[in-house]
Image (tube, rainbow, N blue to C red; front, side, top):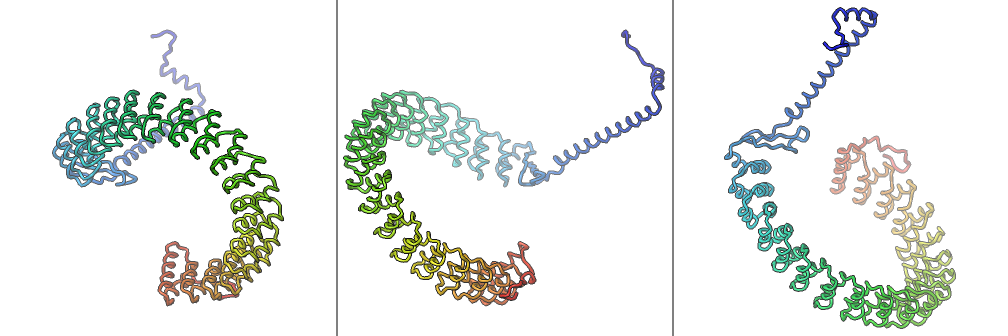
Length: 605
């Protein structure tokens, strides 16, 4: 017995318990009894819940198939959309039979995973009608000779790729890359090759250009890359190799000696030595190479020299875009023989030189470039009034601010585009009205009408102008409903059609939809009508079948639609009503005959 440890006897416990008040003792007994009951219930609940879940997971999933060595169980939620396939037999012959002949390709694939005989796997990989099954069979082969035969002869590319994935040694991959009949298989093989000597051989000798290019791009040995770039017979392969060459000397040699322009262009793009680029920009005989080189030159002296001496327009123009010497730019703007080069220089200049260009340069292109930077009002005025080229005058018209001058140009210039440019800046309503009433060109009149605000004048234009585009422009500017209603009842059906589209008065629209003699006007009004009685009347009585069909599309009353189906003399109209009726019944959006009662004074339901 350990010291200081007291053992309680039953009598001791009784004595201690007797010291506790009776009421407290009874309370604790009840509390203990409740805790025990609650704990027992919780344990029972957890056990039942676990049993229920296990039942769901195992006992309730639908068994879709369970015969002949195959068990297929569907998912409890998705059913046969998500299947779990298990081969339940261990009989090799039955497994092979399933793998070869089962009508379900997923079952065959699962069975193939249990087949081990190489001959059987080869047969399945060669003959199964399903791609996935053939891939599974190919991926289970291990003998290199069998894999190579499959890679060489199988008709399914994915099966060949699956077999190729199992080849590890580099020489075998090399042989596949060189000899396989399918370029895709060749490329897949070379992408697994890491030996530079093998990649080099493929790049130099493979019969397929695409494979040679891919191989060259994977070579990392600089000597072999240089050999490919110098000697390969295929320019595309040489370019592929060049992109990984690090020697500037070799790239310089190629750009100066290779006879192929595309090879030299690639070399220029890869060269970073400033002295080589400057030499190419100044002295190469090929203007394309000079152009590519000059874009990478930063030496101002070299650029200035090229700008005034190079014989090629594109090279000079490219240089002008890079220089900032104002004196040199002025000289080029004045004396370069090519208008495009002069224009490029002019675009970078300000001040008096632009006035000189406008006055003396024979090219409209150069003068147009100059006018974009001119701010002097007198120069702009002189140009818009006197320049021979309409494009230059038009550009000047967009930059002037003199209202009288704008008005004069808008009315008097002989070119339509110049007048249109001036009208776009014109706000004088009297001048706009003069133009819209007098200009001979409808596009000018329409542009003027589109800027007018006087509603009465716009109404007159809509009624009297001879061209539809002008009338449309006028109507589109009218906002007064009274004027639109007047136009909607005018003699010209085209004007009525334009005006109806802007009406909001349902009473007027109802009347036009029922009574206008022109079907297109009635149809335009009908589109805006929301009075059920009017729609019903049109669907039953309009003389034009196309209008009746349009009204039918707005009906929801089944009794009216049934009456039309039964009585309309036009087969297309009755068919339209029948289709509308069916659509409403399917959607539940139909109404009874009472739904079309209305207080309208125009029609009765």
